[in-house]
Length: 81
Image (tube, rainbow, N blue to C red; front, top):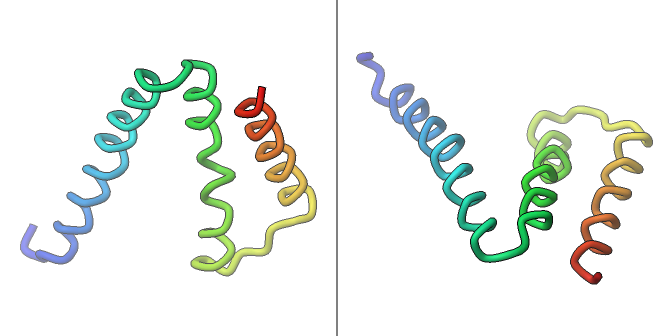
């Protein structure tokens, strides 16, 4: 409780993750079709993939890239339909 940097990081993570994430997902549902909003909300692991590669320097397999590509193409088709 005495380390301000840790407390700020904890508060920021608790605010940005649950609060902003849920709030923005509810706004998405009100502004676009519920199916499209739910699909975009489910794309979080795909959106985090570049951060895992660059920040954590983890190796992503070809299956991971292909799965992300299929998911992105599926969302693009959903938007175009």
